[in-house]
Length: 470
Image (cartoon, rainbow, N blue to C red):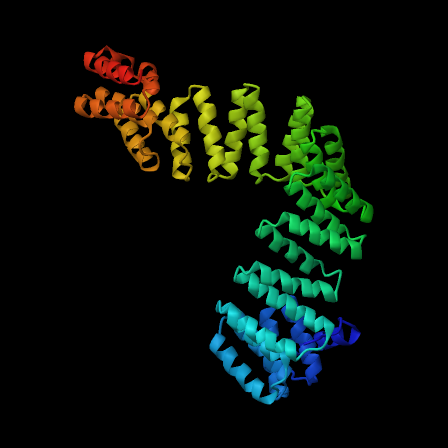
């Protein structure tokens, strides 16, 4: 269904309609007026008002196919697929060549994940349409259905049909590149974009996408050239300056990268990404004062951006200013207590400060949030040993074995812990396992359980395995 842009007549219709709702006086509107009113409310997301307009419209024009099609649209929105399908079947009898009926039928199929049926139905609609704009819309709908099916080659072909009708259909262009990206066909994407740019040489969007493809294949010189052309085509294109800055960072041209990121700050509202990248560039240049200043600006601009808090924390960590690092990671955790990276840093910093209870809490939270790296299990285990929590350390390592079976670092620790708990047989069992896996890791015993090495049986086992490996 096609609708004209809002004009004075339409505004008058809307005013009259809303006045009627307030006064309960029934006014007459022709079917076109109702269609425009309903379309306006749907576009504005005012579904309740759209439904009222459909109800009143059908009371005044019960035979209007377009108004009944709006009703099917509401049914589809509300997942009332049976009602939508029944109404569409009725309308098909009245107007079997109305392409909008097929589009709505396809929408019903699509919402029920019947994408193949949706495609077949949209292809019927194609045969009923000879208008370029309508064809382009149908090609785009078919392309999206193929995307739902992960049939990226077919999807790309239909989006290309959109572009053949309208060279500046940038939505289709983005979708084509998305398909190439998903298929890891970066070189094919580069060839396609170069051909497209032969036809549309001042398209900043295409130059920008071409630069991204060159960046992915690590051809940084061509990426830089592409972003320059994007900027020539539109010198206010923020995205091109950001991407150019990333390329310059890769080429270690940090001052030039800073200049490009700063241009984006002048062109538009500051973005946390640009502020963070400027901070990292200054850090690479050894300008710590400017680096930390921009890290502060990053978290001020976007307190929810974890990379900003991580940058500040790591900055002070590297400077061995652990108290400040701890201060900022605590602030980050107060904002987002479910961020696993925050807890991992929290644990590491507290560990360095020898705040063992807090470090153990941090490692446990890290594990609870799904970070199952071996070092996390081992670090927590070692802290529990230092705290004298031997049974808790054993339980922690037994959980770790589920993820890292036959791991020497775990077996040596379990051996030492069982000796501590006077479970000698288990201690020997795990010591043999550890020595079998890697005899060179026996230094773990010296570091964590030095008294264990005084046992003759332990020395005999170590000597036996070392002689075997000579």
